[in-house]
Amino acid sequence: MVATIALRNIGKQYSAEWVLSNITMGVEKGSFQAIIGPPGSGKSTLLNIISTLIQPETGTAYVHGLHLQVRYNQVRSLIGYLGQTEVLDYRMTLIENLQYAGLIYGLDDNFAKSRISELGVRFQIIEQLKKYPDKVSHGTRRIVEFIRTILHNPSVILLDNPTQHMDSFNSEKVWSYLNELRHDKTLIFISKNLERIQSIADRILILNEGQIATEGTLEQMKQTFHLANVTELQLDKIEDNDINELKGLSGIHNIDYNDDTFYLHLKSDENPSKVLSLFDASRVKKFIRRDIKLEDIYAHLIEESIIDD
Image (cartoon, rainbow, N blue to C red; front, side):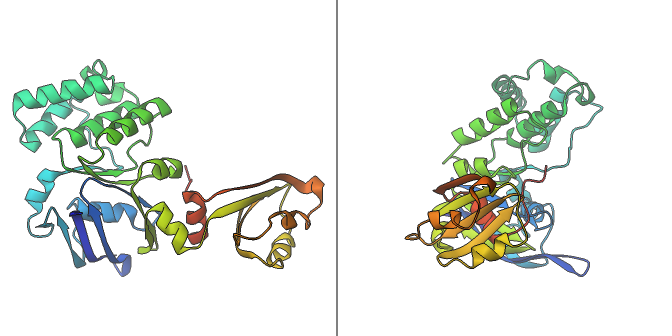
C-alpha cells in the first residue's frame, strides 16, 4: 500500500523540553489511524506538525509525497484539520463562517453553496446556520467546525477529539459520516473513546512522554504483549495485601488494577478459578474472563487512565 503520510524521526522541542522524540510512522492511503495517550504525551503536537501549523525541530514529514516544511501551501490544500480550539468568528453567522472558509479554500461559489447545503442537511443544522455562534449550543458549533474541516473535500482529514462537546446523537452522526469515507479518505484522529477507536481504527498509535509506546493493529498489539484474554476480579475493596497474594500465584504474568477491580493476564492454559481461592466469597463482586480490549493494552502500557473527562 502507498503511504499517504510518512514521518521520519520527528522531534519537537518547547524550551528545554522535548515533547516529541524520534517519531517514525506511516499512514496508508485510505486508512483510519487513531492516536491515544495520556495528557501531555504529544498527541496534539503531532497532529499540528502534520497539519503544517507548527514545524518540527528534527526529522522530515511528507503528505502525498510533498515535503511538509518545503511545500506546505500545497499540503494545506489537501488537508482538513479540526483542532480543539474553536475558530469561529462570532461577528458572522454560522453560514457566513462556512462561506468565508470556502473563500479561503479557493472554492467555486456555487460549489461552496451546494456543499454547505448538502452537509447542513446531512447534519440537520440548516436552520441553525442562520444564527450567530453565541446563539447555538457548543455541540452545534462543533458540528459547524467539523463541516468547515471537510468543506473542501480534503483527501487527508486530521481530527483532534472531533466530537468533544457533542451529545451522543450528534457524535454518532459524525462517526457514521466518517465511516462512509473509509477507503476514500485518509484519517488521523485523536479520541478518548477507546471503544470507538477499537471499532473504527485500522491502526492505533499509543504515545507516552513524547515517544511511541506501540503502534499497529489491535491483533498485532495482542501478539506483541502476549495478551489473549483478561480475568476481571472486582472486590468489595482492594486491601493492601491483595496484590501480594496475587503476585504469589504462578501463571499470572501481569496484574493491572483500578479502584476496586484487578485485571489479571493469565497464561493461556492457566485455570482462573484458583484466583478465587485467595479471597472470601463475600468479598468477590464480579469474576469474569473476557477477550482483550484496547483499554487493557493501554492500561498494560500506561498506568494513568485515558478517560479523564
